[in-house]
Image (tube, rainbow, N blue to C red; front, side):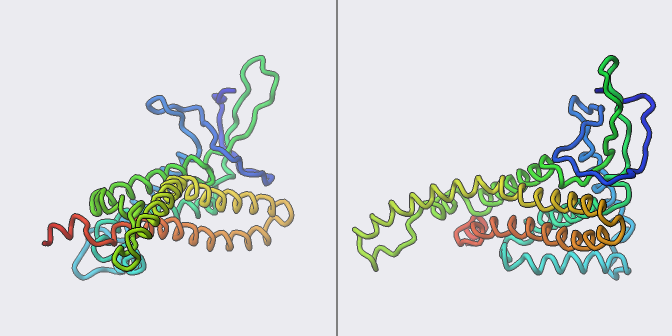
Length: 286
């Protein structure tokens, strides 16, 4: 299969299911294929940059309407996350967490934008293939592609690793995972030693749980967005206007919840370790 030189756009006439994987658009950048999910991600990123620049412009001490709205949303999200990651970590983690929330939210809602899933181009069959040209989505909901949600999960895991090692330290992490939390003076040496083996076993399970976050975060987000997009397409075949509109309103709520869940879980993972006393900042303070 190859792209037709006479490639053109056309609104989709009939509803079709969303493909479980992104489509190669036939273009390579630095040796990597360009997919329709990547195109949507670039568009969302550009919209965030332009939206903030147009709303805020040059930040002022006396904010205008646009700056007040952006600051109000940021303050509300910060106040929600601060009890989770702690006062010591909120300033360090908030830019990352806020970026996750805004980016994921807009990508979740991207499937509701005009043209997403309806703008298509013709992909012609190779000479002698015997197959007719096929229509392929030019842009698609970014988070309905598992590659996108997996990349977000890898980023979340990478930031968790950095913040934990930088601001808590390897000793705090090791004690949190494998350390004996019982008081030796209260339970006695023999019981304390027996509990140490239990805590070691539980620590091994916790390590598996931490690694499994890459799967749980990515599949939770992917499953909800991908399922919602296919639901809207399927309902479009029953009643092209009314039912899909109701489903789209539901997807607005689901997109908001899933963006908040991803951000909240990322904050919880950081706060579980970095809220412990004995981190590097505490040592410097003394």
